[in-house]
Image (cartoon, rainbow, N blue to C red):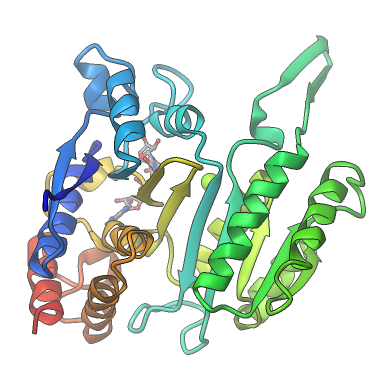
Length: 337
Ligand code: NAI
Ligand code: MG
């Protein structure tokens, strides 16, 4: 049988270093793939290409799956964000971010068992980019929510909840104020909930949700929400479990899925061999689950958790002294023992 082809965008800064670590670990546990390396980010721009070249997009469309390192976007000038281009071109409508307590990672909620997933809409809402200024002193932005947009996102969230045998899904909204837009989102949520009687479905207003998250985060299971609330709430959740350094994500579309770490290209530590590859490794674990490779994914996840908990081979961001390759070697040792 020929090997499965998977697109890889190593990206910028620490991207290539953590990508190597991630692929070494996947191969060590016996996951075989034909890695199709693709251009994207500042590296592509420096070669005179767009930040997300058409060829890269076409290849991912063909392959249906890719994993991506972080890409650098200059602030306020220069090229369009490679990520925005990727999400738009491939219509990656759902952004999925788990937030789970990591043993050995210090923070305000050490000892609390947080294990939640945020499913965020990724293409609509105030991020549709429709802004105008009809008067020098008045600027407006339009919030776009469509019924099909709600439906596909919410369906994905319920299916994921069911597949992962989770018990509860909570819609996050502000429908008390935005009665038409968020009202439509909520209406579609409860329509879908009726098709999944085994899952407990409820809803919460976004401000109360934030308050509950910083007081009693362990009560939640799965969130489904619009773009803007999801952007903010998912960073909040990453903060609850030790920050962006460990946070993985998946971008899901009807025909493609792209997995990536939540953190950026960390130019301040690039090339030093000290980056923590955990977020990209855990993104690869999400990819393995997406491909039905549950056992290999679980083995890798357990090994990453064990290395973090033990603390002897953690990288500098977690208070350790290990290099990226020392951390990687220890994950491989545990995952294959
Ligand atoms: P950043 O996440 O790259 O870095 C923030 C801080 O966290 C830095 O001190 C960095 O050293 C540290 N850090 C991040 N990841 C780490 C890791 N794996 N191991 C150890 N330390 C780590 O965020 P920043 O500085 O705001 O952005 C840098 C560049 O990354 C920008 O060009 C930005 O546009 C881009 N970016 C790209 C993303 C993507 O491709 N998905 C996401 C976020 C930012
Ligand atoms: Mg954000």
